[in-house]
Image (cartoon, rainbow over all chains, first blue to last red):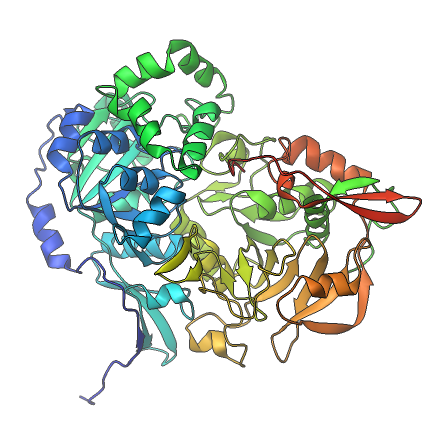
Amino acid sequence: MPERQLRILEEGQGQYLPVDPDGFRDATGKKSRALVSKLVSAREAVERYVADGDYVVWECNYLQRGPSLLIREIVRQRKRRLWACGKFTWVAIALLVEADCCDRADMGFFMGGPGLNRAVLDGRLTIYEYSNVVMTARLRAGAMGATFVPVRSLGGTDNFRYSGAKLIEDPYTGKPTVVVPALNPDVALIHVHQADVYGNARIFGAGITDVESALASKKVVLSAEEIIDTEDIRHNPGLTKIPYYVVDAVVHAPFGAYPGETPGRYASDTEHVGEVFLSMHSGKLGEYLEKWVRSVADDREMLEKRVGTAKLESLQRRSTRKEGFRP
Amino acid sequence: MISRGPWSDAPKAAAFAEREFQVCIAARLVEDAHTYWVAAGGGPMYTVLLARRLYAPNAIYVTEDGIVAAEPVLPLDPVMTVVAERPSFRALQWTTMNGIGDQCATGYMDYGILNTLQLDPHGNINSTWVGRYPQQGKRINGPGGADTIAAQCRRVMLLTDHHKRKFVEKVDFISSPGFLDGSPGARERAGLPRDTGPWAVVTNWAVFDFDESTHRLRLRAIAPFVTLDQVLGEMSFTPVLADAIGTLDAPTERELDVFRAEMDTRGQFTDASDHWIIREDDRWTMVAKEKPAGTGLL
């Protein structure tokens, strides 16, 4: 055998979640494969499956078909020291930082405002720099059971310097190639259109990394607009995006993505979207959280008392282009 | 790059906001039957939407959430420019972020269109931090999908407001790659695909491309309502000057009608312009414009 070394040309200095595919397999090995109901309330799901210090990935975001109700529940339960996967997210990181739930984030894309900016400067929030697609590549590597993945981006940027990426001499071409560490989050929060009680799930429309995040994460919590019969799943199995045995909890969550849109179901509440943006940019997210999250027991109470049936019905009526978002 | 087109002889608008001018100019650069990966929302998306309506009906665009070749229902709701019904309508494919990333990495994305907060003479983009990273200054959004677009699309069009603080000799943070240090092969040495990189910069006052040998920003044309001195005066470095600097056509009535009715319906994009541009008897005046307190809801 010729003696050869894999040459590392440059390395980022950012911390990254330790890469441990066998440890991850240990976690998936412990999950039950039995067809048993996993229906729980949002409160139970977050109590049981989101722990202080967890690395959390949510799919889509607080304003676009994301698990907004689970993010609100994390705030309510005052989870601490979460490490957030900050890909493709508008306001969710700022909300979690305001609530003192999150002290690390891999970026991605997010918006901040003065509150988040202060947290960064005070050292209460540490950010590691990637990009949206590099983060989804890391999740895909995690979902492959691999340890890293090459990407043909990130190189030459300052993101690279503050990330867990390495520039290596590619073993096949000899050319410089950026590799990034696989990501296996502790918990994934995913909002879906339909699921059965076991966790077989359907998602319609475009999306970010729903399937990769489900496969890559140790614990998986789904919030579902609609709970459907397993017989329906069996009649059209091609629509199943996530199989039940990767799922730990299923929360029945009509309007679970509020104030965002769930395509095919309801439009976004543009008034509320404006309010959360304005609160963020004016440093008033604390007041936002008090009004919409902390002063109500759960999402049902928020929808009943703060939003109201008339508003919810109008959001449903504004969903008019349903083609492709139903079986 | 600055050619005649259907806009050249069409009736021109007598008044417009600076950013309206910028989007019209950018839209005229869009090539029919080519693929575009556009930043989700704002100027980049309006550029391709306006071009499709007027000049390049078969320009195809994708967004980072995996919507491919949609025929969107306009106008879009605030912020709901992706993963939503209206931008998804009549697409040819709904895939995912990794799906679009793969299509770009394998070379199927001809063009990218991006917004920039700060850029340097080699087209490197900052959208992460203003000030001294990470101790002093202000945290901005981060690259989002722009790093991949800038790294892998064959040609990248950058949009930015024409301000001294935007065109800087050295960006505070490279969020998305331009020609890096400008030396030959710099991008390849960093692991990026060959034959890629920034291609044009369109501002509310001017259009630039990049010098082929030095990879430095090169001024190609300016708006009819500014002078060369004004354009250079609002840059912190001096760009290469093309042999002949062209004059750009003002927006047409038709361009503004479509843009205002279908895209910038709330003034959400152009309200941030500094000036109204007004034409009287073929004389241009620039009038300071009040900027309403916005929430950034593009």
